[in-house]
Image (cartoon, rainbow, N blue to C red; front, side):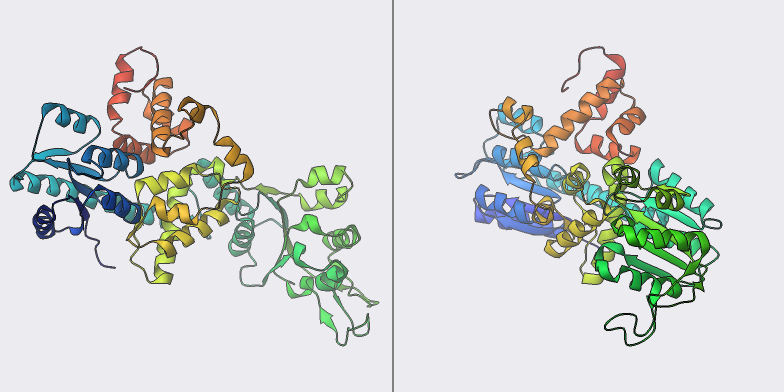
Length: 476
């Protein structure tokens, strides 16, 4: 994969200035995009995620300060350098307050611009290094196809290692998309039956009248259409592992027969007179509360307790958000190879968008969104725009939430996500007295992820200030 050059966006209504600055930035090692005017510059920002924007202060359509404000709200990782032929102290101060990296007067001092671009290149290289580290760490954290650095996932991996050599029957619980089949495959792969068959079956996909035949088999002539003897899934898994996904969907009539097989190891093909003995480890999985279902007579109590010899419960993604950057890094890497696209990762804003999402479909939904974003991406980095095109539309209750207190406080205008996150981090730092480790725990982030946000939002000073100040929480 070729090394990605940093991207510079030059915005000026003077075509000649655009050409001169673009030539200089190209020689400095940047890929350059030029836009004649603020409107076209803002449109380009929706398509690309530049590392630096060099913007004229005075343009007839949209001024440089407004472009700066928009960049800070939508692409906080992009540095901004303002240029002007009419410098004033007031505009310079306002530009710096809004987060401009530098403020240059025309004719441009190219030595100073060279120093600025050198700093941006170094920062871009460092960010790329972080993305590569994230991908490397993701692979190091991988366990039988699962990725997790959080305490919940590390405890899960330890439990699987301890159970695999001994467990015969296990119940795997968790929401849809949390990776229940991966757990079952891990138990099989790490156990003594790794060289034998692993047979998965989705109980919710079998026609009710065919359950018994599918699981236990049938003999010729047992029913209309039974023209040959057919082994069931239990026989196919003999000596290995049978994975019963969505076991809560089994009809009550089949539940009784499954209970007998688990207790005796004997199966009876439909229409047969003599049972057959099988030696099968059973991993059953469900996203339902089987204990409640058993109380409501929707699932047999005795079968529930027979399956629930050992329960492995998977946490939903919203309870381990610190794992999202590593999951995303692995998904991007896999998809980039498959699509043969030079993708390296996500912009900081795009990653924040993923970390803050609901993920009702958990890891499966996250993977699907990342894959769609990879397809939509036009650059080496996936942007917020790519993700917004890949994320599912908000549900009705989420749309109602858009009119909550934060929006009412701003007169009906929703705040940018970056502004909301920044304020939340500031308030959390004040609550914990500037203790970054405690703040990371409260925010559900790794310390590395928190440090990156402190850098993106220029909040390192807040933590230091809180240690020596007792004033009430708020923006610095």
